[in-house]
View (cartoon, rainbow, N blue to C red):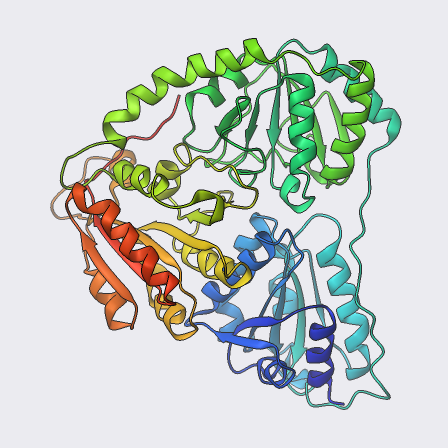
Length: 543
């Protein structure tokens, strides 16, 4: 058995049924021989984003795998790996390396050296006999601890070396760890004694599948719940204790309750300080429950901390809190009434944009009609960087776990397309949507052809205002000679040219009918791109 055959067999034993990539990388060929579906993208970054989403929307039950060629293929892949690292997404990255004799000769690109700062681990294969050992280490790191990309670099000459003897490989298991019971008891006491606690849920709740446990704790304490963008949908946003998610833009209740909290309990989050996430107000008591101790006191000083899997921590806290409350949940009436009281005037302020009849269209009207047309319980939606993220997240109510792929620690334009395609591959029965702008499609729009060619019927919602409007708000006064934000294109025509469904929408009355036509196209197996011509909206919900 050749080393590359052993790699394909290991992938199969680990439950990998599809691999993303860009040739030439012989893992793609031998994976196909092993009946693993090979999906070829138009550029490396998109393939990595697709692998990223496969891992996310399955809570890591399925792991995304990406393989690329050595040299320029590995160089082009850097952004996609860095994005997954920033968003803590577990993907296996398999670059082909230069032949062993020149792997360390300047200026050949060495993935082992260059990806060290954007991977959980990176290891070069040094001989065919090490294949099972290297992949056992890789999959153990992928399945356990803080999620993140793991890389194994495979020199081109090593791929065809013979594996000595028979392949001996047993699939890896997920390992979980919980917090010290004494720490749990102390935190439970603090939560029960707090007068105005707020729970801040991160993406770790998704990976732990701790949605029910999170809801139980909130209801026991009558504590309102907000989330990071990555944690959005971890708590049902239609729940009377839900505040919505916090990003660069947010619903008013998020800001109000964080500002007036006496204790903020972060679960499954990193509390990373970013321009695209909620900033924790100063002077608040913070309790931080996280899987990775490196996050504790990193950006936000905390009063106390719990280290471990979010599910195990929440289960232990629920038991300890229930014991202190003698098994009776607190009355949530006053808190629920306060949430509703704060939300109502905020929503009324935005109603005219959400229900605008203007043309060019309000992007908020497009989002509002989309949210009220699709079956959200059977939909997975993601945004792109910039305006689509900030316009979508406050107004999209996510009630079903893993129905919203939120992100924002690093904000590469064009990320959403690959996420939607990966989500559709992992959850083929769901309607999978990406919402992006005309700047983002300029980065990754060619891979709409990948959706057509590989039969990945997503619904792509393009908000086209022929500019980077959000940049207008933050740039100095521009001149006609420096038209930095002007861009253009007929992207519905592009979608049709690629063999997909493309439609341009300019009238408010046509928004919902177009969405229904697009959904019908996806049901028939055709990717659809709906291009909505919108105004240059720059207002977002900030406080």
